[in-house]
Image (cartoon, rainbow, N blue to C red; front, top):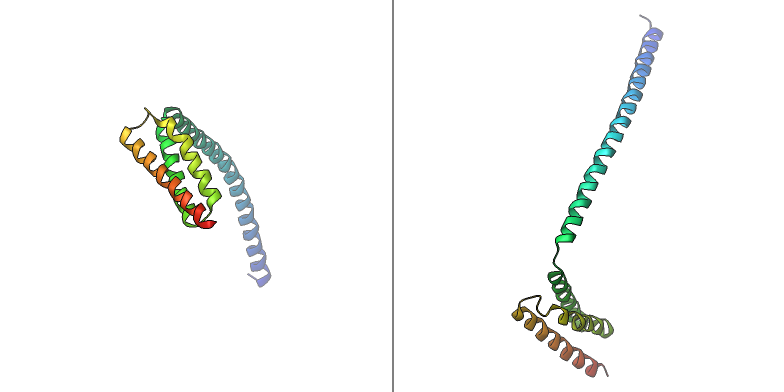
Length: 131
């Protein structure tokens, strides 16, 4: 076989290969559509599970978690002398704590009430030393 014939054969093989790849791409595309349908079903299942969790959630532990987060933030803001931010976090705690009466253990509520008192005293000290 001549070099020209070899080149022609290589080229034909390449075209066949390209044509085959195009077919695979098409099949891959169809598979991709199936995959998207599967992804959508999976996503829907995740959403349904999240909704179930939300429906079953108790509010008091969420409020308590929020109070705890605000307490941590307030202490941090007092340390960095960001007093307006500290005051906002302290006020949020003061607004949320009364909502927890009867919804959480009394000892835990007392601990957070004590933390709120300490934060208010820390805030007052920080304001006085800033003046």
